[in-house]
Image (cartoon, rainbow, N blue to C red):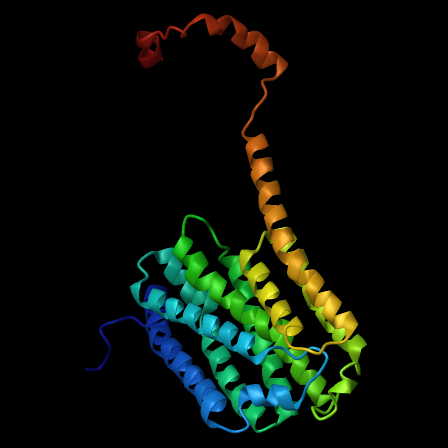
Length: 308
């Protein structure tokens, strides 16, 4: 065999090989991510959740709610992997190969490495890995929205590609990266002195207010259901872990209510504007020319129509 029977330089062949590569590497990276987090959460001591309790900050979340959030991320990625195998539409395959590509594979590896560095208390390395994770997921989400925007004609793409990628992005962007950065910079208090929980309240306020303000803007502009659910979930995980300084506690409670209200308000506004847009009022010319035709249907000269 001097040469392969396929022309690897052909674009269609290259896309097919890229899809096959993703069908192998994506589930493998997901399994490694799940296995690593399970080991670091259940077997290793201190565990991922114990580190949160050992280094409390003004934005410390509830470990149980964050664990549930991560499980939701994994469930979304399982659906994504199933779509990789069963996808038949060319548009879906193009979105998987060129819109997401290997970014989700790198993201799973980065999250697995973060879990190891987290339980080893290498907080500087943890912050760097989370920063790379945010950049990786931010790139894939921007590429999806720019070149492969979600459309109602392909609901599976919206549910199994766009939603899991955005849900994955919001956790490190809004919480994990700033929390790890706080610990790296020493902005935490000793768990043996819970009365010091008010320390570094204003940096925590700045992070929570800024992240939630960005989320609120996205929800209002794009009517983003995924962002509304994820942001509300993260806010609940922060205020449910007590104690919290007043500026942070009030902020997350406020945005816990604002995110769903913004989503429902945007949905209602779009529904009303779409209904008004379907009501077309006739112009003066249409009214004058059309009034004489309201008596009955207009006769059509069939012979003239075909002969002309």
